[in-house]
Image (cartoon, rainbow, N blue to C red; front, side, top):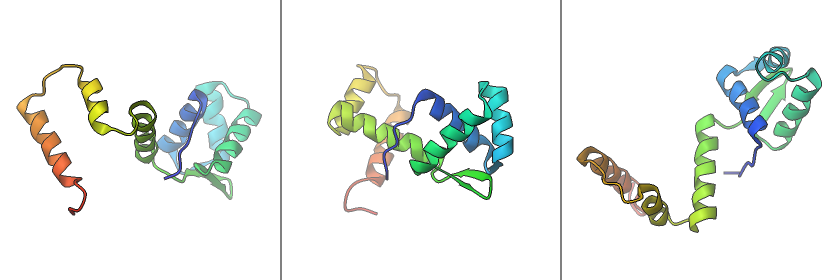
Length: 122
């Protein structure tokens, strides 16, 4: 999956689209004015930029996302683990846990998740 690096305002803008898609560009301009105090030109500039990045599309004045919110945040999480922990999930989990203990339910959920994602297994 392509990696997207977005500013805070681009994330807020894209989140607005995810919540309302498909949305006409006219309605998008109105919502951006109401929720972010943006001018029409700002909305169209950011929209064009995110379309060029391959995150959104604007066809016949109808705006929609090319990836889901979950896909975007999964990609961001993977990039964080890669950049911060050299891609090591065990190192990330060790830092994330910070010495905390898991309850039995949490431990079982993690074991199940690990089993479902082992290489060579379906």
